[in-house]
Amino acid sequence: MALTRAMLKGMGLTEEQIGAIIEEHTNVTSSLKDQIKTYKTDAEKLADVQKELDDLKSDTSVNDWQDKYEKEHKAFDDYKKDLAAKEKTAKVKAAYRVLLAEEKIGEKHIESILKVTDFSNMSLDDKGNLVDADKLKKSIKDEWSGFIPTTETQGTNPDNPPENNGGGQPAGQLSRAAILAQNYHNNLYGKVKES
Image (cartoon, rainbow, N blue to C red; front, side, top):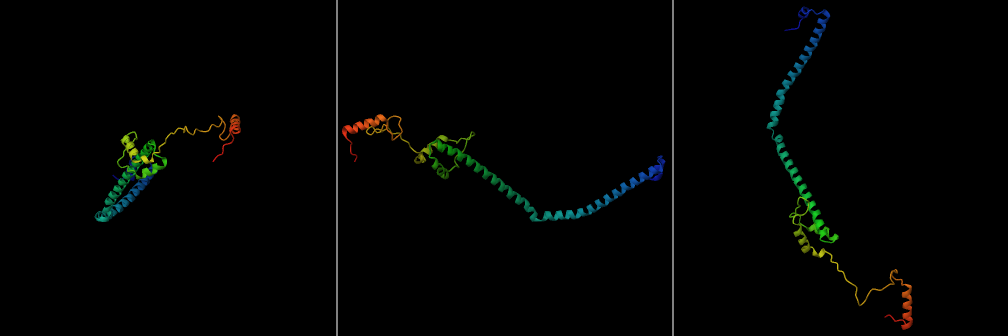
């Protein structure tokens, strides 16, 4: 049913109200007509877009994206695995370094030992300690014993006891009593020639 002036007059509206309603109705219908034209133009372009899409689907170079994706995905997975392996090796290396230090390997030799050690057979437990640490300690003692410094405690030679410097006097200085005793000895027996 169309909106007419006669219909609006039948509703009891004034001429001024009817004019306002008709004007607004005209604006709305003009806007809708413009939208219909836009949609028709877009619908005509749709056929061209569909043809382009069909052409792209048949083009093999576009289908290579899946191969590229799979290659990149595999490379990224390999990178993550390599990074995890390096991190694991670094942790094992740090734990082995501690084990070497505990076994008294000289600090200057630890880096050299770490460079030639194969860490692929070593692993860590849940607490971050090396698995089979006792076996590793034994192998360290067997393989790297040349790098473990030995210290011997040796007593004084009873044939040549250390010099008494007068009890509490700085080294090289004799106490008054020691000087007097030495002078007495020298005067009594004479000075002994040193050869």
